[in-house]
Amino acid sequence: MMRLLLASTLAIALAGCATTYDTAPVASAPAVTQSTPEQMASMEPGDSILFWSDERRSAAFRDMEGLFPGLEVAPANDPRELRRGPPLSRDVQVAIRDFMAKTSAAGVMVLDDGAVRFEEYGLGLMPQDRWTSFSVAKSFTSTLLGAAIADGAIASVDTPVTDIIPALAGTAYDGVTVGQVASMTSGVAWNEDYTDPKSDVAQMLAIAPVAGESQVVTYARTLKREAPAGEKWVYKTLETNLLGLIVEQATGKSLAAYAAEKIVEPAGFEGGLFWMQDLTGGNIGGCCLSLRLSDYARMGQFALEGGKGTVPDGWFAKAGSPLVDFGADAPGFGYGYQWWTYPGSYGAQGIFGQAITIVPDSNLVVAVVSNWPTATSTANRAGFRDMVGKIAADVD
Image (cartoon, rainbow, N blue to C red; front, top):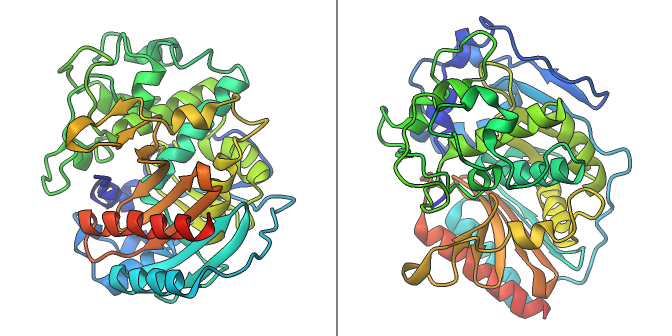
């Protein structure tokens, strides 16, 4: 279900355009620096990541910093040590390796009560290398929303979007709350079809920047309402981008700078992170962090432990609950605040097989990064859930 084209590879050929427009101001933070892409000039308009070779994707997924503009966040001052636990049973290790081989996984890490029970790499990825997140970033943006509420920068999820972004008054987002954006229940019509070059998701980052205005706002102005706010769920990457803008406007900081304080430091990331920017200089809330596999696992552990001191008490329990229930067609499945919910677990997902799954009752975190042959695969997602189930049974 999770899909993201990287908006026509950031519509990309952002290339020549990327330096044409002034970027939005970035709040100063010693842990955050600008990343200057070195390879964008070699990309052609319409050069879609969906049609790249497996080899080209694997190389790109390890080096998004060299392809796209973004902000670089330094590692935590005190990285969280991941202690080693006993290995999983032989049968479960075999099952994980079989899954990795069948799905072109670049790495899998399993944390049981914070201890590493399994860690293995493929596709040339090494422990110190980073790999792109695609829509796993959405759950990071959700976490920063929780942090902004805890800090008092945003009153609550019931705050109207227009209180924070007045420029959206009179648009389809007038009367929509921050929580409805976070749960993708705004009622705004949207087309997330990556095979359609005229779809909203293919156009949103290609829209010409307007001086003094975020691309998110510029594209949001073009949208229409199809249902009352709160009544219909539709997966919309723009809404996570909007959520990111809401956090940036409310806190006065880029998502990267705020993540440095509210995620990287408290979660103890060992390899820092890179967060891509759009043409107007805002971090793209719905996509494209680059992290080490171990830091994906640390993020899952941070959520499992509740993010104490960073987000409100109970934030992850609510954000990872089925605020939207997919019903009889998918029993036990739903969507929270930018987290997918499954029977007994919740998690973050991104195209080409990126995922963090958290099983609270088993104190379990499973992180995987991949280069699936196709952007989406129902069979591979089901296979991953089945593998997580086997791991949970082994550690319980």
